[in-house]
Image 1 (spheres, rainbow, N blue to C red):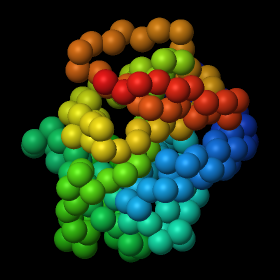
Image 2 (cartoon, rainbow, N blue to C red; image 1 turned 30 degrees about the vertical axis):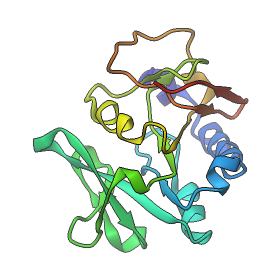
Image 3 (cartoon, rainbow, N blue to C red; image 1 turned 90 degrees about the horizontal axis):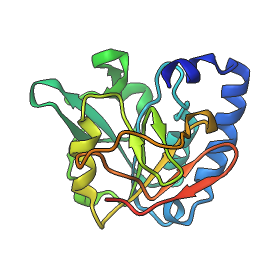
Image 4 (cartoon, one colour; image 1 turned 90 degrees about the vertical axis):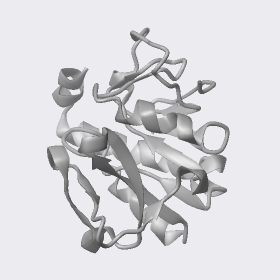
Length: 183
């Protein structure tokens, strides 16, 4: 799936990302959220910069994850100024600097933008294999709306799902939306 995503024409990826982001910004669950967790896309992932900028422009609280490798966990941090408060972390992903960004509890988050390598139309998710989000997502159960934003090429008929894998409420692509019931 990573090769499929990387094979997409860069200009097409950029156009798809703009269209996907515009769809995200119209979701009632996003518009109504006061505290939004996102991630900073890297490599050929969806560029989340415009989404993150919209969160801040609307006066919402922005939360971004920071990898705590020793604990095999993601810690959530409030970010007010991504240009000044982010630094390249593990794997080169931009993440909050712990010395500048206060830690936030998952219970304060209303909307979560979830990354992934592949999804099904039933909103099942395949991550990168580290289990970081599989451990984090249950902490939002029943409290936050979980959405993924990916290219339609990342939607597959089936995935190897285990009891540790968690679905999202909605997957948004450039071609449409898929609804599911999270685990």
